[in-house]
Image (cartoon, rainbow, N blue to C red; front, side, top):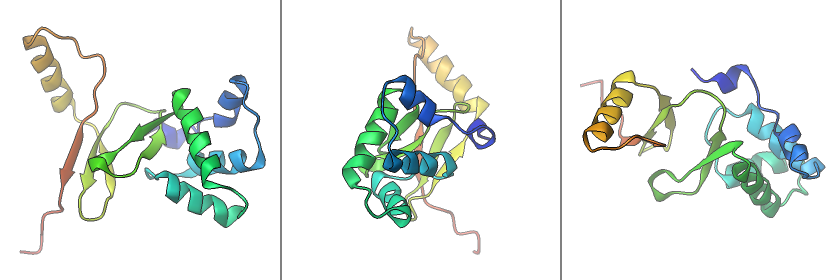
Length: 144
């Protein structure tokens, strides 16, 4: 579903273009971001990074994530008021379903939902400029 899976973003190139020095810790963080399929928070990124190099600091993770977010290379989400989680900004528009028991984030696309949102906005005299849809749910028990 996601274009990002097929084509990995070149965060290093984008950071260099912005005049940011690419240090070993930043390169490790970038490698983690380009290889992740989930929506990790900064602590999860930090733990993955220190498995590679235990000299990486949590503040380096936060600074790198803030830089990438300011550049528009990643999106920050705070699902259900939890810690900020990140995803690549590449790929097609999609919405999220968050499993409230496991914290799993499921990405989905629905033409029906997109059309309904447009209809609602238009009926109220608006054009949608940007939106995010987050659904929160619990897996139904299929065994009964």
